[in-house]
Length: 412
Image (cartoon, rainbow, N blue to C red; front, side):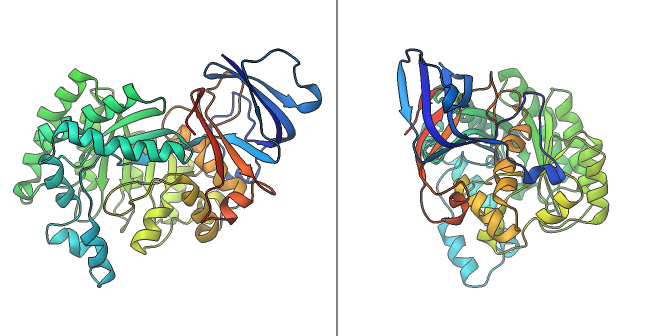
C-alpha cells in the first residue's frame, strides 16, 4: 500500500541515515521542510520533499496535512508498562508527607507492586498492560522499551517478560524488553543480598535466555537498593547471555554507578537527577546515552535532570516517560517533552531531538526509527492544525495529535 501525506505545514526531524544521535549544541537544530509531502509504502518511508516537487503518481491513500506538523513518533526508551493494579494510596501518602524512601521502607513501593503482580495471572496482567500500551500509542509513542522488575521471583519475572513478548507480537509498535530483576531486594532477601543475586544469575537468566525473553539487562543502582559492585556482578552475568546493560542510576544519590555503567558499556544511564562533574567527564568519553525522566521528577517533586549542564558539556540527551505505578503513572510523551521545556529549560528543538532519534538510540533502534529518513519505518505523528511545532510543548495541557501512524498503520 502506497500512502502520501500532502500540504504538510512543516516536516520535522529530517536526517541522513548516518546520523545515529544528536549531541551538544547540535541538539538545538531540528532540520525540517516547510510545505512538504511524505510518501510511505507499506511500513517504510520511501520519499519526501517540497510540495512544488510532489509526485503526481496514483496513491492508495492521500492524507491532507494542511496547517499541520508531521514528525517521527516518540521513542520511549524507559518504561515499566507491565504491572498489576496501582499504587494510588501511596500517592495520597506522599501528599500527607511521607517520602518515596519512607514508603518503600515500610513495605510499599516496588515490593508493593511485586506482591500484586505475583498474585495476578499472566492473562490478567496482559489485559491490564495492553490498555496502557494502546493508550501511549494513541498519544504518539511508536517505539517503547518495557522492563520487568515487579516480579522479584523466578516465575514473576518470567511472567512479566512473557507478557512483554506477547505485546510485541500482537501490536505494531516496536517493543524492546529489559530484564530488571535487580529492581529491589525481596523482603526474604533483605539481609541476604548474595542469595538473591545468585537467584538472578543462576536461575532467572538461564530461563530468560532459553525463551529469548529480553534484549537488555538493567539494575537499580542506588543507596538502599543495589550497590555498584552488585550492579557490576549482575551486568557481567547478563553479558554472558548477550544482554546489553541499561542502568537506573543517580536518582537520589551519587555512589559511582555511572562510571561502572560506562565501564560495562551500558547503552544508557537513566534518571540522573543528581550528577557530578566527574560523571559528566565519564560520559564524555563513552557511547552511553544519558536519559532524563522529567515526569518522575514532576510526580515525586525531586530535582530534574540537569539538561543544560549535560547538553552544555557536548553530550547527547534522551527523554523517556518512566511509565510505572509508583513514581510516574503516565506514559504521555507529549507531557514529557513539554515538562522538559518548562522545567529543564530545553528548547522545543532539543526536546524533540531527545524524544525521537536520541530515544531510538537509547533503545538500540536508531537505524529504523526516530527520524524522517528514507528507508526508516513509517512511524509518524500528524498534529492538529497549529501555528508552529512550538505549540506542542507550549499548549502542554492540550492533545494536539490528530493522527498517529505506527509501522505504516493508522492508529488514530
